[in-house]
Length: 386
Image 1 (cartoon, helix red, strand yellow):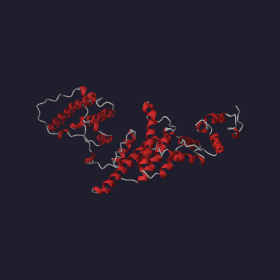
Image 2 (cartoon, rainbow, N blue to C red; image 1 turned 90 degrees about the horizontal axis):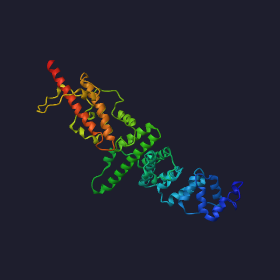
Image 3 (tube, rainbow, N blue to C red; image 1 turned 30 degrees about the vertical axis):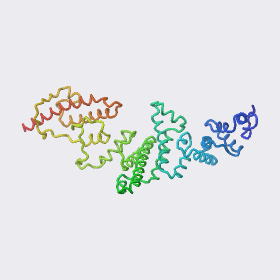
Image 4 (tube, one colour; image 1 turned 45 degrees about the horizontal axis):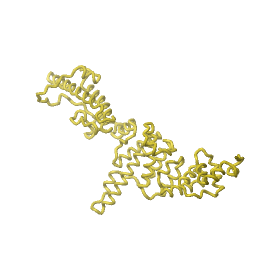
């Protein structure tokens, strides 16, 4: 076999490349030359020798583009490959350098659903890498050719998501409601407006998750706000607890000077309600408001209940369950209860089984019911002796 001494000799008779071309064909040789481990100078030399790639394989065209992504002649092959594949966004996921083709689709697309599909493919791949540690087999089947890192995918999601948002234009849920027409004639335009709103909301959600991966907390908070403005919740699945807490802290005005009053709409008391068994409807915002906007009940003002059912007195074990004793005042006991119960409700809310940890919730609720009665009787006695 002839050993080449220069680029010009790479494809001379007797070389390994020449033998591949002779016995397997030019298409196979192009496939070899576009492999990541093959020097791109060899591919460029072969293209020059052949006067370009004249085949019809779109995958080969995209592979040539990826290998020569930083060279002018590479882009034309990428554009041809994308168009031959009917602009299928899945084709871009197998590339190491899809940026220019992503930009091409964003600029030339006239169909917002196409851009939404492009965003969905890259967002799905981003989630795949983020959750890869779970080793779900179905993930690997769909992304076996993926060559981008998690951070690179997140950067592309930012680019595409921004493109989708710019294409639609910012819409708030309020502006959407105000734009709705009446009657049968307005139905089509109303449906289109709703579809644009939903696509925009999804884009902001994906942008927030991508920004979190890239470590830009301020961007995450900005996208959470925009997601909420489009009728979504700031509680985007996958956003860290710390970021949710920071957003809620600002949303509810806790980083501004207090007026000393809690607006009625902000008060939350799920735990003392008979509905406190319905724990699966509690959101992060419910927990946040519950923790920060709960007034301590004045037990002395509660009406005395006429009942034939005797309440079991609180035991030392009941108090110990909350890390207190009967020497603590009612405010301390109530605060401790809310803090511990919040943790237990979150455990139930986050568990994979609907009934996991609910027994412990019931045990804490029952114990605090007895403790509450203890403080109620104590408050009534103090009121009588005053």
